[in-house]
Structure formats: structure tokens, C-alpha cells
Length: 295
Ligand SMILES: [Zn+2]
Image 1 (cartoon, rainbow, N blue to C red):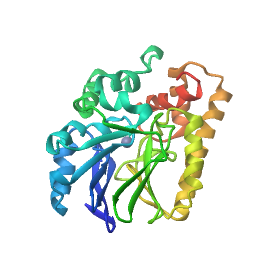
Image 2 (cartoon, rainbow, N blue to C red):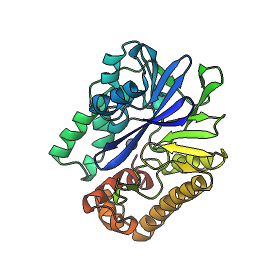
Image 3 (cartoon, helix red, strand yellow):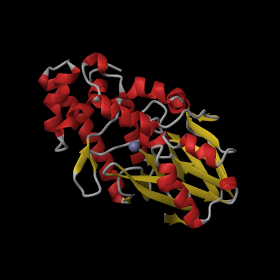
Image 4 (tube, rainbow, N blue to C red):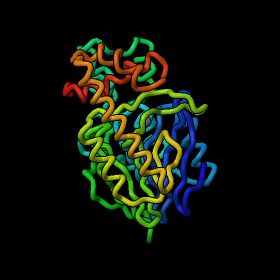
């Protein structure tokens, strides 16, 4: 468990070969954790991390799910068992997907089956395992709300749409830090060895670019995400620019290719957009479906 500020910590784990960072806010009024990783991360990462600094079950007040993905909501039910009083929160638009793993799989991971892009059965089983059990959400946010975890320990909820309709971030104005989860994704997800592991997986190019602009204009000192190293000062603007350039390039290449079939677009554009492993070209379906207006 790494300490970022006097009351803010970061759990550092892995999802496959990719890094996974989960922010923990330990205010005088209680603890909030942003995202719970995959189902296995409760026992492998979160509870050992809590124990290492002395967080007890009755101190955990909120779980805020930034968006509905297996590596962000999979541990929700496990956390509920450890701390039954905890209140689960997420973006209003993401509520159904956050609380229902079957719907999340069907509507997000399996959404491109009609276009011939879908995960092999074994991979799909792994995703379902990572998604964990259903856990209902108690509170939803639309951005603009404030959570006071203690005197001078305020967090502002920001709507950072694009990777999902309800994607949320937490803004700590005092430390000029934004905890943005997967809101913007640069041009690639690198693994822990620095090799390209996954392409950007935004779904809605228009709102994703608006989020990029919003983050750029916040005048931050720190941008803390869930899979990229902490960005400081000028690195934040560079990450925003890298994010924007990728989206614009994907859009341009798609237009130039004239391709309208999603599977063909993945195969054609994947190798042009990044040096990730070959099967990752199909993960471009999330973004390219957005560019093709299929979602
Ligand atoms: Zn993620």
C-alpha cells in the first residue's frame, strides 16, 4: 500500500500482466475505496492492503465503482461480505451494469457478437469469474456531488464519460489531484514490463474526447488512474494529447479505409494503431463500434 497524501493511499496489484491501482481514501469519518478489482482481488490485494495500515471493516463506508468492468466491480460482493454496512455507489447511467454481472457480460463484453467479434469460450468464462457475484448499488451520482470524509477531506464527484456512459472520477481539490480510473487511456495499456498489452477501450468517442478536454482544463498536479503510472504536472497534458491523437487517428484511418464491417475494421486498423499482441486487434471493437456509430 503506497501513501500518496496524508489520508490517501493506493493499492498496487495486477490484472493479468497489467498493473492495477485502486485508490483508498481514509478520512476522519471513514474509508472510501474506488473500485474493487476482479473478484479475487478482495483476498489477494484489498484486505491485505487494508490490514497493512490498520483499516477495520467497520471503518469502510463507501465503495465507489468508477465504471462497469470486471477489474473494477468484480470484488464488490466480496467487500460487502467483509464490511456489510458499506454503501455501494456508481454513475447513474452505469447502475444496471455495475450491479448485474450477467447483464454486464451480455451488454458490454458480448455486445459485438452480432458483428462476428466475441471472446472464446474459455476467455468468456474467465471474465465471468472476474466479474464476481451480483451486488446492488445504493447511491448513484451524475457528477457535481461532494463527499466529505472528514474536515478538509472533501472529494468532488466528476462525470468522466466515454469509456462508459456513467464513468466517474474523484477530484481532490486541495491536493490538485484527480482520480480518474480508466477515463482516458492514452494510446495503449502497457504491461508491468513496459510491453503493449491492450488497446484503448473507450466506447463513445465524442464524450471520451470531452472528458479528455475536461481533464486537461482542471489544471491538476496529479492524475491517478487505475492502469497507468501516476501522471504529474506536464505529463497530464501529454497523456490527454496522446489520448486525443489516438482517437483522431482511429477515426481518420477508419474513414480512409471505407470499411463499415466491425470485424474487418479491427483486422485492418488494429495493426496500424498499435503493437499489442495480435488477438488484441479484436479489442478495438469497443472503440471502432463507437466510430462506426454501432453503439
Ligand atoms: Zn480497468
